Image (cartoon, rainbow, N blue to C red; front, side, top):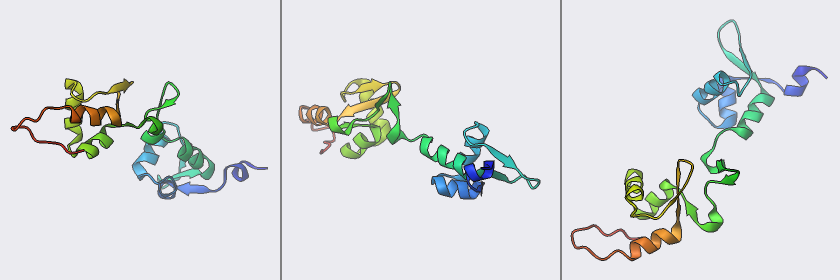
Length: 140
């Protein structure tokens, strides 16, 4: 069996980006990092093997698939959420969530550099707040 039969057909940068559902720049960066083996033709256009693109697609970075010490960052079974989910739940900006977490007003844990919040803790923290007439109320 030849090398080309093992690795499938050759794809252009555009076809590879469409297959991986990423921008062409992401494929180009993956080539430069050595995550995808590719060659340039005389017109300076990139071509890569379909199998290499498939391997990259399976292993490419995704926040949903991210892990810390082998465990997923967010465990839906424990109602764990990230900053974006908390911001949406409270109806505030992500930067405000980071600020409140740093001040200690929102209970959280850290997994590496990632803030992890539990839904029950957030609900409890905002239910216990005394009503301040000058402060905007956040409905959960």
